[in-house]
Image (cartoon, rainbow, N blue to C red; front, side, top):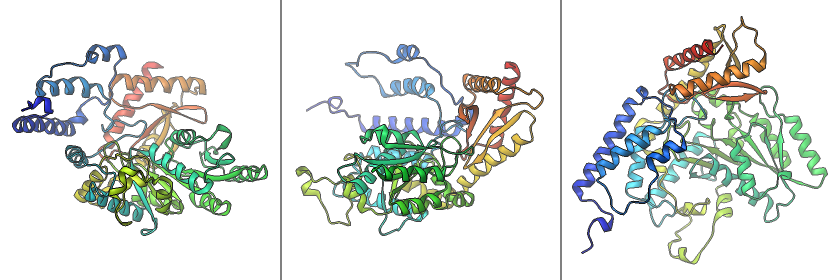
Length: 476
């Protein structure tokens, strides 16, 4: 009989011990991470010195391996769920979803087709229905699919728009987006074979709003030149500032011009759960397709994106293939095969973590968490405006705020302020006490906080501002 090791098996006792040790480590991390340094630093040389080796022929005890991973891998990874992780878009996560992901992986559920796992497919259908209702999409006609993240959701959306609006010939097709649109949209456009000449980047104004008149002029000019405008990508919460494009106005333009209206709400879409967010996102229900990113502001662990569509048939018409090896598992039309609605055939069971966290905490808890995040950023704005040391460059918008160190008494020029704020960011990150990096707004270097972690307190934020001030005084 083949030995257990050659069958890649542990004994039942060993499996339990290993599993308990991992759960203990995860729980310990969740309850103590606010005491840890959020930022990790390491060079390639340092990492090579720890990990670089030939694949071992013989194994090692699981406890020894786990200890090594916890000490060397996890400690050398920045904690995106840390209360003082403010940069890019944090990943707050939640423990219930972590355990749900563990279940889905442990049972190795294939979530591509109904025949392989009807329960997994059904839960994805249910969760998509919940999201359709939240965003005001038609419940019977609408549909969607969970993806690895916002980038894949945007790629799926643009591929669908191209198929529905252009057919097989898209050589003259033109797509429109603003200069604040997320880079994943440009990547999606390039991956799908559009040339740079087919992309129109529409400028935004000083407050980073989509310039409607410039858009209208651009569409008219393209039509006069015999081109085919087919898609517009709007942002529901830009990554830089949280700004929401004028969705109602853009929807009206798309309807008049017969454009596919895609809204990238990967960052800000979840704000619809809060009263202020719902008001800011007015018109989001007009989209033909909408990207949201549950592993951001819906507090799910990586990876989990989502694409919602107004008409579910547009996805199946774009992605359905009928290879011979799948002919025996085609069910009736109500038994959805999600491999027919997107790019992936093999798919992990992403719906479980969303389902279990909503069932555990209830949607109201998520509403309160999102509302808290929006209020926290506005509280920080008020705090900064009472200081003689700080300038708010862009007001708190959907839990993002941009500001810079600019003492009233100093009267610095912009070049000096750019250098000063860049150095402040570097000092903070080098200290490992907070993840706070810069961005560029109106050609100015500014600090940016994204406050979507429901476990970030105002004390956390004030401590970070004080840290910035202490570094600024030393630099200056």
